[in-house]
Amino acid sequence: MKKRTWFLLLLIPALLVSLAVARPAYRIQAINQLHLVPDKDSTRTITCQYCHVNPGGGAPWNPFGENVLSNFKSTIDQALYDALAAMKDSDADGYLDALEVFAGTLPGSPDSKPLVDAEFLKKNFEKAGGLGLYKPAN
Ligand SMILES: [Ca+2]
Image 1 (cartoon, rainbow, N blue to C red):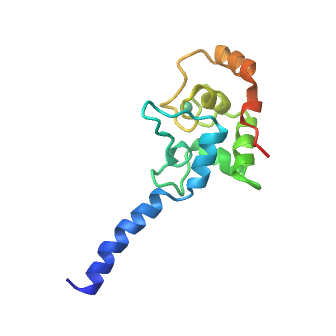
Image 2: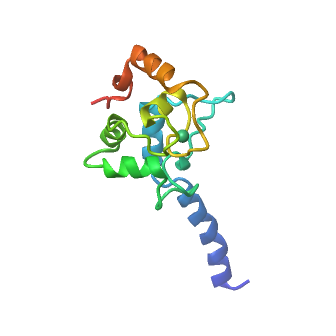
Image 3: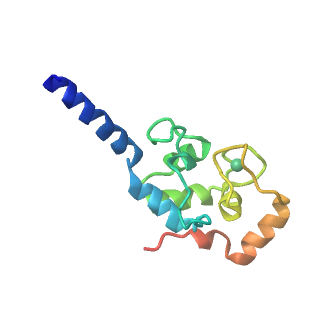
């Protein structure tokens, strides 16, 4: 096999891996700050598509990702908090982003929304600590 073919065979998987782990720090920050829970196998299930359209991240962003992006002035933790504090319903499914994060549904997808009434959810959200649940640690 030619050297160039070997090079491409090694380069393509390396590129795919780097796309899959792009900005892992942002994903990990969101998991910790938003208290996103592990699934039954203790594997954190939040993917890049929590904020991005594509599984590998990058542009474009889904409606919640656009909200976070528009609030990105300094750090990812502050941007996540400010996006929730904006009290938007980014995906227009009838539930504020903060309530969706609290309920464990996707704030950037109208196909994912809480099964309970928004007012009932809001009362429980406030009782649990409201936006204070998602304040940046520093
Ligand atoms: Ca949603």
